[in-house]
Every structure is written in C-alpha cells, then in structure tokens.
Image (tube, rainbow, N blue to C red; front, side):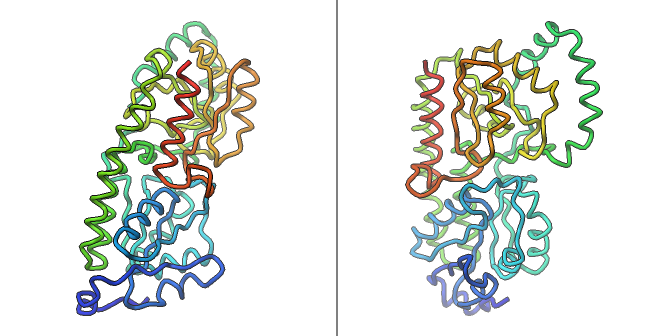
Length: 345
C-alpha cells in the first residue's frame, strides 16, 4: 500500500483526496494510484454521502462508497475487490455496532494491514435497544392480559429463537443516522479524521460547516413532524431501526415486524399474531417499510389488519438519483414528510 511519508504529507497538505475507484476497475490499484492523495472508503451510502460532502467542500475528490444504493447494510457481503480496496485504503469509515455484519472480518483485516478504521456509531452516545420504547412494555403487558395463553406461545417461541443473536443485534442500537443531531456530531468527527489523515485543516473546517447545516436540518425535521398530534406519534416499522428517531422526535414504537434490530431474523407466527393485535389496538393508520428490503411480511400484516397504509421509508440506504432522497439531507426530509403525511390525520 503506497502511503505518503510524513514529510510528503506536510508538503501536500492541500492535496485532494483520491477517488478510490469504481466497480469497473481494480479497486486496490485505484486506492494506491496517486501517492499524493488519501484514499477513503465508506461502507454505507449514508456515511459515504456525509464524507463526500465534506471532501467536496474541502476541494478534494470523491469518497468511494462500498455499498450500492438500495443495499441492506445488515445483509451486504464484501467481494474480493472490496476487501482489496479496504486493505489499500488509508481511511475506512464504517458505522459499527454490528451493522455491517458481512464486513466485520474484512474491516478487521484492513485495520490489521494498517488502514485506519473510523467506526462512527460507537462515538455517538449509542442507545441500548428498546431504551426509546419506555411505554412499549406497558402496551404489551396489557396485551398479555387480554391473551392469557400467549405466554405459552412465547415460551415456545423463545426456544425457537435461541440463535436470534446470530441474526440480530444485541447491546447498543447501530441505527444512529436516523437522528440528525447525532449525524451532525459525526460530521465533525469525520472532518477531523480526514484532516488528520491528510494534514489539511480544511477538512475539519468543512466538517464543522456540515455539522451546522445538519443542526439546522434537525430543527427543520422537528417542524415538519410538528403537525402530528401526540396521540398519533406511534410507529410500527419493518424492523427495529427507529429507536433513535423515536427518541429524538418524540415518537413511540408500538411494534416491529422483524424481531431484533437486524433485517435477517424472521418472526414466528405467534409474534406476527401478537403484532397484528397490537396494531389493531393502537389504531395506527400506517406501517412503515424499508425501501431496501422486500416487504412481503409487512404487506401480509397490513392485509391481516385491514384498512391500513404501507409507507416506504429510506432506512438503511439513500435513494436513487432523482428520488429526492439521494443525499442524507434529502433522505431525512423525505422520511419526515412521509411520516407526517401518514400520521398527521
């Protein structure tokens, strides 16, 4: 891996970041093609966009994003070219906290080979799963009283899902990017890391500028959601991704279709039956599905409940160009607008 010497790095403080390469070329060769640049790779489209906005502001080149638009971060695996590109990069920006399960070995190997790994989520005051759902337990307690035999079903269910930890998350929730204020903090962290890696203070300045923009966006999101009355601030989602969003913008998560924080687990029939009853009792007008995942289970739940809308949100990936969600800011504006339209009444 070609890296500038410390002396060269000082002399090239204003040098541009090297675009790590496109899928049609050899990513390992691309990452080392310009010894005056700093090669940067981000794992997800969200962190790739944030890093690229900072790099562009600083007058540098692009940042390669490993995952394509529409990819599910929980289910993405690295190709041999991806592994080579990360090993040849100077800086890899990842989410962490178990989100990129299929990349963990490759990320660890790249770090051992000398690539700097910045895992963003652990630095953003992560929440344990379920912390934002304080009254969800009360709802399920009431539900349990109405369904006295459900406990036996869930006892069996617990035995069936002893290995759920292999497919879901435990501990801290990795979905930090759905809280704009946390991403504002991340912009500063990424800008500082780029500045340290390149020796160019403009990256830190641009990280700070993006943080200010995102702080303003956070207020804008709050205003967009203000039309939803308190009694309708209830979310039912395809999987447990909206804990940070709920905590930041004053929502309750009544239930999730796929158990755990990963999209890779599968609900039992007892879980789906219990969720159907929860949705009926809560009277929510919409179920929110992830644009990056098949929504057959969500559609089945909606059909069972009846008279309920399925609304797609951008959870794990930005949208395609022209979708209005092809930047992080556009993604969060689009989600807020769709949630407001579905729940405001």
